[in-house]
Amino acid sequence: MKRATKIIESAYGSIESAPAAVRAVIAYAAQSPRLEFGNYGDARAYRSESARITRQLHSVESAARRAAFARVDDDDVIKASKYAYSGRMEVSRSAAGGFDIDYCTGQYWPTEYRRAAECVLIEAARIAYARAAYIGANQV
Image: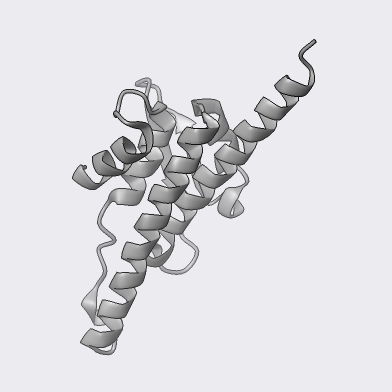
């Protein structure tokens, strides 16, 4: 959770100011990739993949800043999750009042789940920008 807290605070200033759905997506992206060394031929390939996955987390942080600037809300994230990254990361409201994230893996979860989170946040920002432009264009 420390990684998620750092990303949220860098984008929003405080955890409380970030929408709950954004916090859920970032927390999902910040979890450990749980790479299995046995899936790689040698240590060099393993370290290379690990470094690439770490860079993906930095991309999630950039997407979180974009979402903060666009003033993304929970509904934007839910809508974005239906389309971004082929809809593989679904964000929905839970019965407990929070948000659930269901992810459908394409090939290898450790290499793609952070990219999916990044895409959801970028699409949510695009939706928020479009909403703001529509509201601005229709004000009298």
